[in-house]
Image (cartoon, rainbow, N blue to C red; front, side, top):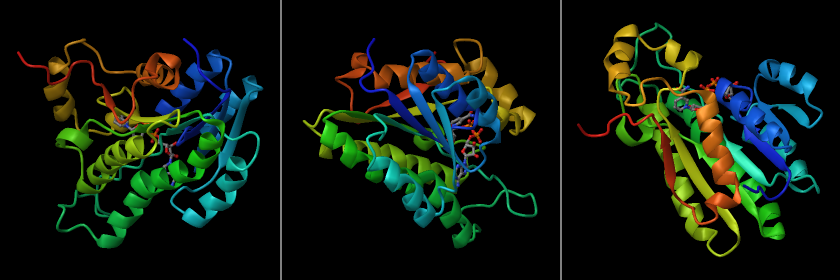
Length: 252
Ligand SMILES: NC(=O)c1ccc[n+]([C@@H]2O[C@H](COP(=O)([O-])OP(=O)(O)OC[C@H]3O[C@@H](n4cnc5c(N)ncnc54)[C@H](O)[C@@H]3O)[C@@H](O)[C@H]2O)c1
């Protein structure tokens, strides 16, 4: 397996899945930059890996994002692989009750969409030009199984933004045709992280027996698919979505 280039940028990279992905690329000898609102969880990895760097920024703030990321895109150090991993899933209103779609305040929808969709669009747009100049580059959007099927714990603002990044990958894949760049998406299912520990027990009890591989996914499972999509093994894949769901929802 060969990965062209030596620098990976992971947005939302200090989350549990992001750190798993970072680790996998560091093991391959790549340099890794993690861009996140909260860089504290990345500091332990940063302390032991010279090839790591952390960028603290709010990707929901498009102006701040442009100010921090444009100089990186214009530098010789622009990333060869962009992983759009940023995600935010507030599930409830301030009273702790889930909103229906029709009750959700527009400003709340817009705040979530700014993270889950607009930030992905912005990062993708900022980093494609330097990739085009080099005639290589890999972009990977981390969406969610819920973007395809919905679900009991998947509110509209989250699902619609994540479905948007799947659509974005398909449109951009066509636009990038013949350039040497590819863009794909990953739909994680139930990955063993805090995000799913926040889900009510009865949801877990209903889903767990239906996962044919017999266990929850791990951040490392998502990371392996990122390595694959970033490598020459996936030269022929673009505009596609790989589901890391342990076989959930296969037929009887
Ligand atoms: N954990 C799961 O089971 C699961 C399932 C499906 C999809 N996903 C997706 O995988 C990705 C990673 O999930 P995770 O479980 O590691 O979650 P996580 O919450 O640990 O990671 C998300 C990261 O995004 C960062 N972030 C949020 N808003 C930001 C902003 N405005 N600017 C910059 N950074 C911001 C957070 O600080 C966090 O580090 C997310 O996109 C999530 O939607 C996770």
